[in-house]
Length: 451
Image (tube, rainbow, N blue to C red; front, side, top):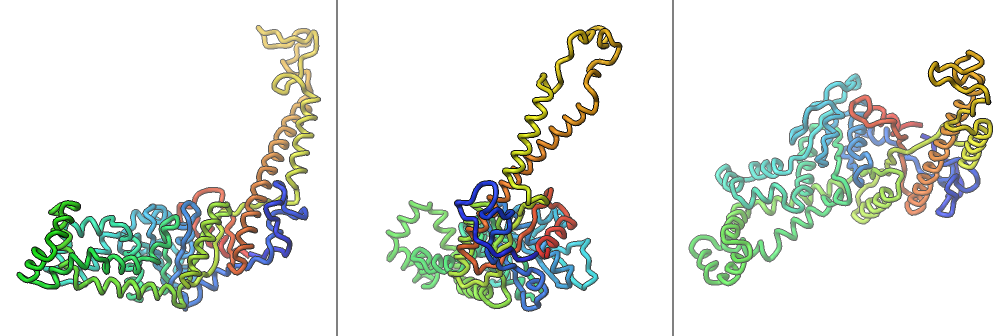
């Protein structure tokens, strides 16, 4: 991949057909820094790569391609996807992914690398934390608690927090050289950055402190305190939440009391790990206005959180082998061919009217007076040339549409680069079809690093 040519950005005022100055699309972006992917993956100091971006931009495929390329270059890699889509498992030839890393078969291990993949199971991760940090009796009480079961299965923010927990677990095991994280689509992809803060707010909130108070006082004194000192409060909560739910919550809080501090500590440690050297964030986008607007949000948010941004991966970038042929020239040539074909053959469906006295015998299918087959009055060469002209005209119009698309993509890239000139960019040329196997992932990896 070569840096783009120095030149003035095309801007919003550029024509639809071509960037300013008559240059082909791709030549107008000013001094874009190029993201060097292989040095990033090869660096032994790089231990975590986080791919984030909006939905539908190829983020999961990018994460898988990065993991495969790093593994085939000699690193022991695990790809963790938080996206519930099954594309990652399918592309790696695995029937299904779960909370346990699975070895990916079929990769080139000549360099000594390995590739594993897994998909976050939010509830199972929560269960593992409880089992690891509580004695068996208390763990059983927590796991069987109805409020806990609801919380671990879908409470707002739980998925993001558990992603932090799982990332921390994988890093602590020190079993892999590189962890590649595929985050959920849309802006929620960065919600895990807020997980420690939101968890702390939840655990330090007035409701939790209220519900923890009886457990902290303990025994009959605690029950007396609850019954007398907060009877009105718990009565109101009982009416609001339901008596059984309130009792489930109180039981859960009492059982989890000793674990709350550990949740906060581990989440804060993982947050610091994401900020530390050795972590690299890649923002993934497509060359479309909405996708690059989201990418700009991610870039700004990561900067605000002091997270190390490695660069932008721009997927599905279109190109043309005839970029020197402008929209205007292609459209004019197509119109000229259409006019010539019509002037030579004004008859219906592009076939000239038969000369007088050569009417077709509808019974025999033979032209009267000549014995020649129907339609043979027009030379075959002329009809063939008309067919070629019509095909050429259609191709020219398709080329004009492709050039318009390239111009739109170029303008969106120019606008992003003007706002964030410091962000290195790696462009991935569009593939003709979807990626569904290791061969397709290798092709993505090759395009990510194309010179």
